[in-house]
Image (cartoon, rainbow, N blue to C red; front, side, top):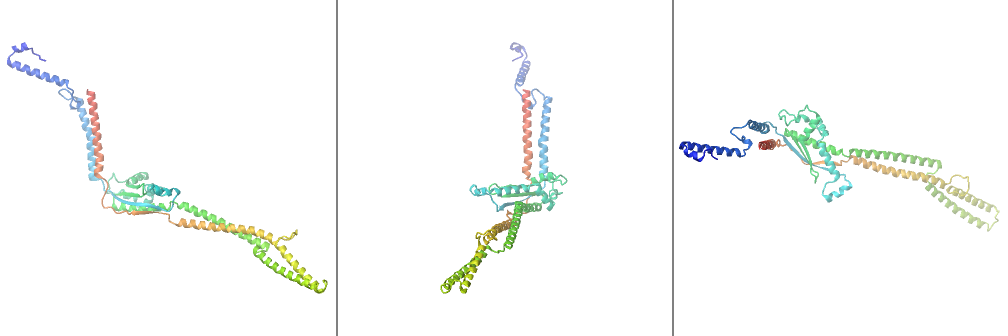
Length: 420
């Protein structure tokens, strides 16, 4: 497009014609620039930046200072100049117990530790980071003083004036008790500002954990001993009562041993029967030569009657002869004594069983069933492993840069869309 016609241009002087051509070229260039899209972050269209562009760029610079520059400087100063060295002492230990359950027989097939052992290992790992361990260590060491030394930095150390719950959270950051799922090996690590503190803490934790292992079934074993003792006392009282009842019945019946008395009476009866048979033979031989009412025959007859009466007396002592109202026979007394003897035998067996059970429970209670095997002993560290300065610095700076980049890009995108 030209603002001077061709005919009119021919009538103009050469200098004027040259100026008109330059003006037309400048106008065409300005028209093309006005039609082309321009990014708002470059300052917008036109010949001067708008006021909103200055505000936008000011916000970008301010956000960079707040989100990137300040964290960068802070992390660099802290990790480079302020952060205190922390030393780590490590120990590895395994739990050994003699107790097992039915399910433990399948542990060899699966390759996993026994259920009881794994559960006890979990208890130890939780006990290490618990309030109970803190209280135990505080009674043995100046625990809070170890983590609040004057030469440690304020961020990593602990303020001793804070509450116990706060120190429990801090303690869980300073220790770690991890368990290998396959072998149930406990790996214990402790961080402290002094190498000696880390070493002492690991040893005390192992000592207190082993004490806990010994108390796992202490109550159950103490209950078992107490119950076994009660059973033994009852069995002893029953045996004493049965023995006294047997003694009283023996005194009342006049029989020490029914079997022995019966054997003695049978022996006497045997001898009496032999004598009776001999006297009867002698009387039969005598009556062949003299009369039956002769003095010799009457004497022999009286001896036979005496022997028969004696035999009948002894027989009545052994068993009932069918006479009513008589005294108790040996069979009756033996029946009563046999009941007492059965009660006495049962009481003796119960007493013997209770004695064995009590001794077994007592020995079991005095036996050490579990212990911690610290196969990797703690050592005094020589090199500080914490803080991991470069890692900590990058965890602060890199996320700050990423966050600022995302916010700046988002702001530019929104501004461009609003400008279009």
